[in-house]
Structure formats: C-alpha cells, structure tokens
Length: 496
Image (cartoon, rainbow, N blue to C red; front, side, top):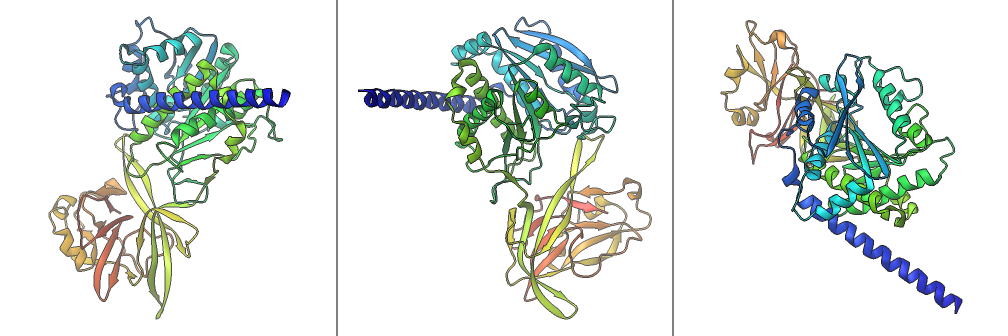
C-alpha cells in the first residue's frame, strides 16, 4: 500500500500546484488588463524628477492606509521618504531608483499605490489578504540627486549599488539602516538595464531580467536565497504569457560590494528586477505595466506563501542576459574601398543625449561594429544585399538656421543622394553644441569638415544605400528611411 499512498500524495500535491498556478496566472491576467485603471496619470515619461513625485506622496499624507516617514537626506539635502502600507507579519522592503536614471519601477510603484486604494473593483479580496498578511515598505526614489541629472550615480559620483560595504554615500547608509531596523523578510531591488541586452543568444530583447543574488563566492543556496529563486520562477511563468522569450537572468557571480548580494547575506530574501527594452516602447510604459503586474503577483505569492510551490531548479532554465542586440543592423551591404568591393554588416546603436535640464533627450547614433555580424541581431534589421553603401553628398546651398532647413523637400534631397546640409557662417546654432532636428537630415555647422571616405566603424550613422545608381535607403543618424515608402516622422536628424 505504501507505493500507492506515495503516488496518491504526489498526485494531490501536483494537482494542488497546478490549481495554484492557474489561479495565480488568472489574477495576473486581471491585473494586467486593469492596469490602465490604476496607472498614475501624472507620470507619462521616464525623465521625471523628485519634484514630480513629491505631490503624489504628499497627497497620501492623511490617508490612514499609509504611514509616510522621512528616512534621511541625499548628499545634496533632498528628502528621502518611505511609504508604509499593510499590517501583516511578512515584511517586504521595495526600493527603486538607487540609480537615478532607472525609473520604470518608480512609475509602477505609484500605480500600485493607486491599486491599493481601490475598492469594489473585483480585487477587494486580493487586497485584503495582501494588506493583512504583509507590511510593505516602499522607497520610491532612493537617489533623488541622480534623478535630478538623470544619471546612474549619486551626486558624489558613486554607484551606490557598489557601496553596500563601505557606505560612502548617505543614500547607502539610509538603505543599510532600513534593512537593520526593519529586518524585512523580503526585498525587491528595482532597476532598469540597457535595452540592448538579449534573452540568451537570441534576437529577442531582454524586457525583464531577474537575479537571485549570491551571498558568497561559492554561489551557495540556503533557504533565504531559495525563496528568491522561487519568486523569480513564479514571476517568469506569468511574464512568459506577455513577453514570451524575453525574460532573462543575470549571471549570479558574487559582488561583495553590491546591495543585492549583501541584503541576501544579511538574511532578507532578495529579488533583483531589471527593466530592459521592448521594441516600440521608448518611454517604457508597457514595461511599467509588466512591473505592476509582476510585482503585485509576487507580493500575492508572498502573502499566501504559494511561492514555496515553485521549483527552484526552473530558475536556471531562464536564459542569461546576452550582448547580442544592436538597435539597427544593416546586413550584406556592398562596400567599395580603394578600388575593391566586399560585403559587410553594420551594427548601429542610438544613444541618448540629454538636454533641457535632463528632462528630454535626443538620439546620437554611431556605427559600433563593422564586418561579419552574423552572430548578432538588430531590434531593427535591413537586408542590404545587392545595395552599395555610400557617404551622402553635402547640399551646395547653406542656410542660416534649422527652421529654414525644415522647409526643404527632404524626400527629393535624399533621392538625389544629399544627406548633409550646411549652416552658414552667420548661423546662431554654434553655441548649442551637439543638437537635433526633427527633419531627417544631417546638419553640419559652418567650417565643419564634411565626412570623407566610406562610412565605417566609429562614424556617425549617416549614409545611403544604392542600387544601380538609385538611392533605396537613407540612414540618417541611425534611423532608416525607405525612399519608396517615405515618411519624415521616423527618427531624428542630427546637428553636429
């Protein structure tokens, strides 16, 4: 009878696990579908500053749902606040923007607050259980000085996620004091990562990446870290429904200076979440929605302890982050050089340049690799087989300002092979430095030498692709324009 009983027990456990997963996935689907109801309408772009979220915190000051506490000040004296909600035994500390230019989870945090304030919307039972079983401590902007500049590091120039050991920054001191004081059972270290990571060796961008941080060089797994893996497995199972093949994980090499590694070592189950890229979502609003769903789903698993039903070994089935994706890959272009021809691929990335006090940005694109790129992928790809790459021509007429240039017939210019327009000596744009134009043209200042030679490694990504003397594509500052299907709304030009 014993084998029969064992098999029966195994079957019951399996069926219970399947039922629990189905319920979790259904709740996640509902959260995802209803996100717009709770989306904080005042945060629509990712380059916001502390002044933009302070009113969202202040308006909750008298709400009995919350306890709001100033937990310290940044190096430049900006107040760092913590928002407490819930009354349960399981304590969860969530912090975002310890890197000032990583705000996706900050937006999602305020969406979560709006959700927690809801009622009679079909989620009352979920909310009640969550707030009765957990106490949540949110620090939505741990590095406000960095956010002010939209930069990774603190005002001191220190990466505070490498400051857990020496704690040279006041922000690191604050976080360590919170961990010591609260002794949280769970921690969420919320970040953004480059949108060019791939999920394994694949063309798929890693939209969400996870890490169950290691607390020693041996990569040991105790109960604390095991729970991190189980939570990540649960979130990955849910996210695969929305971003299949676009979830990755970091290699778990131990970083003795990292907060994630040390918080795990100090006894808190730590999950690191990185918001990467998603094609067509430069402001990360879809990724924000995924954060909202995934974090609430994880908190639900903590609340009802269903995380323990996840198999930690499935953590290792998540592909590691790779560096296999460029913003644009042009493949199989014919290059003519020194009287000879050969075929090459071009890997191009569009890099953000801040302006207007770091609240806005434009793109400045470079050719970052040149040659055989068959192992790499592009978020956008152009097959240039049969096309010859050439430097565009400089238009012979000069103009006083960008406004004059914006009135030109761009399509006709590009068809004739003109990609560069020169400003006259009396132009008033010299003081601007590197800048942009919405016209898909590459603008040169007076006296600036025109580019020479075949476009190649390190060049600004402006060139044309021709077949039988006719321009098929114009690439201006890394944005592709198909002249047979032209729209000037794509991309940005550049003023150098």
